Amino acid sequence: MHPATAKWYDRRDSVFIEFCVADSKDVKVNFDKTKCGFSCLGGTDNVKHENEIDLFEAIDENESKHKRTDRSVLCYLRKAQPGKAWPRLTKEKAKLSWLSVDFNNWKDWEDDSEEEMGNFDQFSDVSMMNNMGGEDDLPDLDGADDDESADSDDESKC
Image (cartoon, rainbow, N blue to C red; front, top):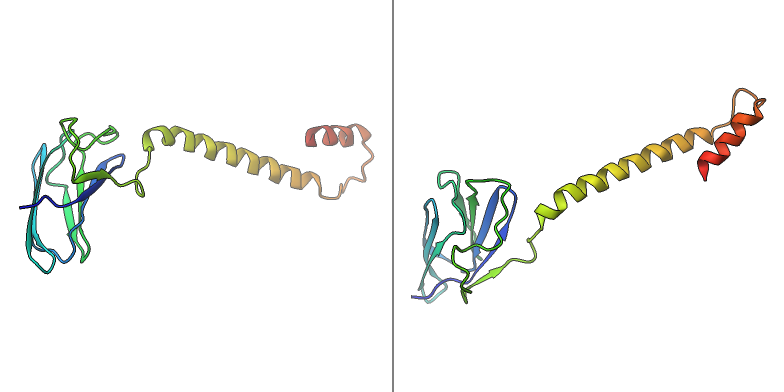
């Protein structure tokens, strides 16, 4: 029996594990509060794969699910505590030869959430300023008698 090669990544309310087995058959995925079990027959040789993972934190086993494709089996593990980052998938710090981080899907959502909001706010402020600037560039329908307001408009564009 061989463990299947797997990749994982962390999200705010869930953890994803992809077991990389092509042409899998007899797929069994067991979700437990603190464990995830996986087994299948894979490839043309029907190699038996079996993985057991003691998870870093608890999951909601009733809300967790998996989906089989011809290339792999993707497991969606719903965190029991959404919003809590998992620095690793396993309870133990030991490095598992068959498990790696899926860097293509990895996102440091913990650090990004506030920053993204900040960037978004900044962006909307800039758009507002640009829109206001655009209105200032419209011809002055009052005839531009008031030199003082024209000067203040120039200052606001700097």
